[in-house]
Length: 440
Image (spheres, rainbow, N blue to C red):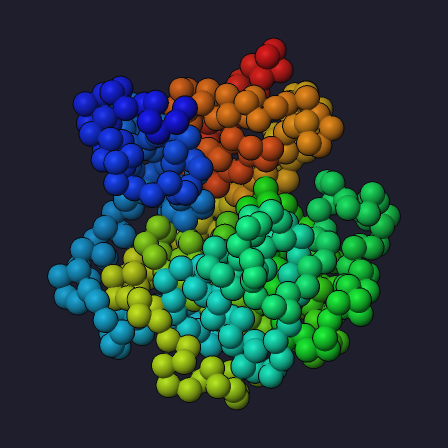
């Protein structure tokens, strides 16, 4: 359903959508225009529209609201900071407290943090830092990777979103990612011995100018459908980069703060560490905040360290820092990372049965509360068309579930503290709608 088609539906919704249609520029998020959902209020994992309809939110601002909407601790912290100091880059007690608390979650070698406002901004900063430290300019990225929509971060994208936007950042090389459910090399893990990682040297030999500064990748690819690679792939990428004298950047904008069952996804590796980590989204549970985290050896020299060079107008904004500190408080006090580790195996076990019992489902990727469900769409040899996928999304919305379920891969991002009955209710609705798709 288009935004324009919903105008005239209800008085408050009508006014909001009419104002958006008259004054907004098209190009906003697909889920916004497809749903035409006007949110009146939100609490926990639930949304209500102005007419009082209730929705279970499995979108959560692409996983940003890890502690749920309108958490009382966050409301209190943000309100308190608003009354004290709300804008400017000057030192504040709340910013210092957050840096101290965040550093305590990191390895001793990686307690170097610079604050930003969005994931894209932090990715751009990570690229500048890698160039600064190495004196090189090339970057290795991966098929299916997504790192933002600013020009530099868009250059790293391993898909079709960058079409018609060139020329982009020079010196970006792309290699296959370990999409084991749909292997580009037509092999099977673990028998393949992670053959895709063996292509890294070949791609470098065939396309590099000999100036590799960094390798950037998501430990779980979010926009590509929540695709979780084997740990061995990530470990070999780190080894490859370090053999080349390049830095490794982990884009953990989605995967950090407990989403995958550990505070950072890199903690699930066998001791291998990235040199730079980008975090965002869940950092302030919905308010704009992001950061880069760097190892000691990365920040010991280079032009990035000059005054104002690595700074950001809104980086470390005191209100965002209050939200970030309260988010971290809730995650730790409610032990939400352990909760994900406890609940995720049961959740994943249920979902991973779906490809055997639901013909519409092709595969399921599940890493903690970061879930991707592949559908049998025509482009992958299946029978579902784009209209079927959009019908699924509309049906879920009609049944009171908001989820990124309008394309070939469904992406689910429940809050880390979503009540089990609420999560099961949403999954029951999703399963029922997938069965309806089969009848279509």
